[in-house]
Image 1 (cartoon, rainbow, N blue to C red):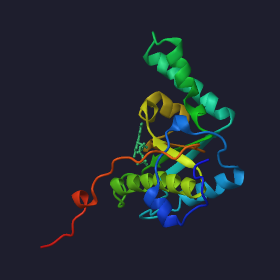
Image 2 (image 1 turned 135 degrees about the horizontal axis):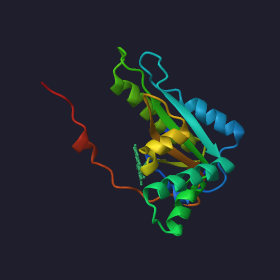
Image 3 (image 1 turned 180 degrees about the horizontal axis):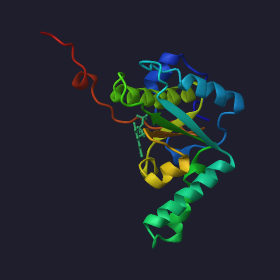
Length: 195
Ligand SMILES: Cc1cc2nc3c(=O)[nH]c(=O)nc-3n(C[C@H](O)[C@H](O)[C@H](O)COP(=O)(O)O)c2cc1C
């Protein structure tokens, strides 16, 4: 299992974290206690105005296949001639990982706290989920794919006015350490401001 060594300190974990592709995630996922701890850590984010501008939906066990069927049905509506193999792939999407967490951005408008800041707070929940899962020894990936932007799927999720999907966080275990990914040079994206 990745990591194959004892957990190094949190900073090293943060500095070396990588996503693992949803299709490479496997059992085990978090047990009920780990899940509770993961979710509690995830919502501990900066939140200007204490609005709680987000909510979470978890998918595990049979719910993953049931939601997958909704994805396949919706996909077929838009692509009536889609071959069975493609529909089967849609139906299996959420079964790629033991756990999927939908992070829903929930904005209040008009409000003195800018919409932008409320949305950023939801992004922080997504990133916290990646980090917290990683610190628990799990691997994870933040995906949106087509179904984060689909009105029909939003209805299936029960989203209301002002709500949209910030991300689907897939969580599980990984057999292999992922390869490093090309990163921007720090000097290219960070400069000391001077007058
Ligand atoms: C908002 C958001 C949405 C993303 N959606 C997708 C996606 O739909 N498909 C995909 O392959 N990667 C997507 N990614 C990229 C992966 O989550 C991840 O950034 C990439 O695999 C490398 O991750 P790492 O830098 O954490 O290792 C998305 C990233 C963000 C921030």
